Length: 250
Image (cartoon, rainbow, N blue to C red; front, side, top):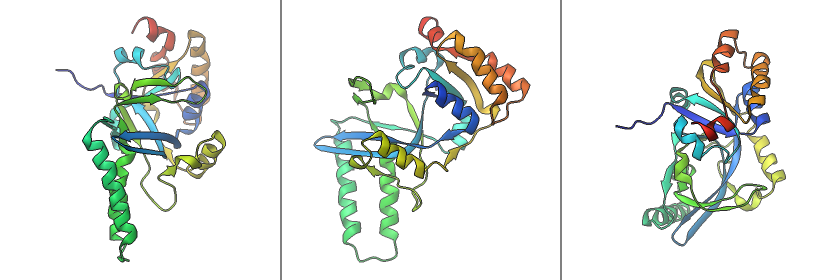
């Protein structure tokens, strides 16, 4: 029987990996587009994303979001409140009904005379589910890169951390308010205080693009603010994989 792996990978760029090792994971807004029948929802949600992949599966997934990465233990992820994404087909009646139900619920909340806040709380708890839903497949849109049609998002087996809904942050941002990099940067500043902390022992693998990136990464580990003891650096040094190696061998 096949079992899910015990590692979650987060892919990114080199400087972002160094920043994670220096200052831990930071929340940022990700733009989402969910289709269900005739319904389309476009918004941005503050989150951090990981992929639930085996080493043997990295070859088909690495490079989509960056050629550098970090693999964390699943126990760490579960203890930090991460949750798997629920994939929904854009042709499924479930997806359209769910989005219609949220719209109808919102109208009820807006038209109620209840001042206790119970309806609003119930609505927030329901719409929170939307932050964990993604289409099974669709257009993969990334800044500065060619759009990939019919990209199967489900192959990523995404897990997400999203901060709790509160008055201190915007849990959903309308897509027309976060369409540019400047707008996104402004919203990211509002959640910059939210961190997803880890200990050095929570790291299982590190990924760099080329062999020539390994020694600079090891040097960075020795000075990282997270504080990596020598024995941890030695252990992680033996667990550094390269994008080129994964492409050829894994």
